[in-house]
Image 1 (cartoon, rainbow, N blue to C red):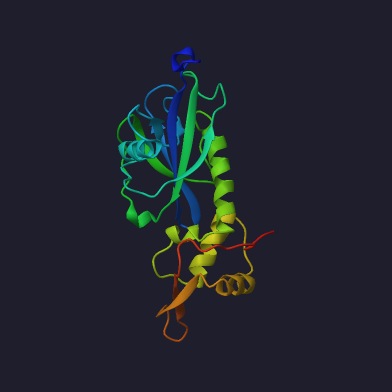
Image 2 (tube, rainbow, N blue to C red; image 1 turned 180 degrees about the horizontal axis):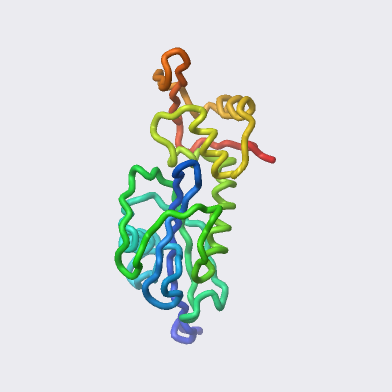
Length: 224
C-alpha cells in the first residue's frame, strides 16, 4: 500500500484577482514584489497556503496582508499546475477572482510587496510567473459569467441607470452594445426593477433601477 511519504509533495499557492471599473476602464489590482523571484515585477496578489488553513482562508489572508482588502467574496477560478511555472520548484496555484466596487476599498501595500496599484486589463505591465496567462483566463471567464449571471451587480451602486449597466457590460466585453437591443434584452429578463427614483436633469431624468436577484440565470444574453 502506497504511503503519502512515498511521494514528493508539491507546494500550493493562492492567487487573487480583484476587478473593478475606474474611469470607464476595467482594472485589476496588482502588487510589486520586493522579494525574489521576480523582485521588482508586478504580479497578482497571493502566496503560499499554510498547512493548517483552507485555500479560501489562505486567499483571504494573502489578499489582506498584501493589499489591505478584507472580507470580500471570492470565487475559485481555476488551478494552474504547469511543472515549471515557478522557479522555486514544483508549485501549484489555485486562482480566485472577485468583482468589487472601488468605493468599498482602501488599498495599501504591506507584507512582501512594495506597491499596490490598479492597472487596466487592456494595458498590463510585464508580469512575473505565469500571471499574464492567469489574467487572460480570468477575463475570458468573467465575460462568460456575464452571459448567464448578474455578476455585474458587484460593480454597480445599489441604484443605477440603464446607461450605467450598459457601460459596465461594454467595458468588460470591450465593445459597444446597441442601446435599444441591450435595454430590450435586459428588461425582458426580469432581473432588474425600477426603484421609483430618478437622477439627472428635471426635464429629462433617468430612471434608477436595482437588481431583483443577485444570481438570476441570464441564458443567451448578449452573444455574438
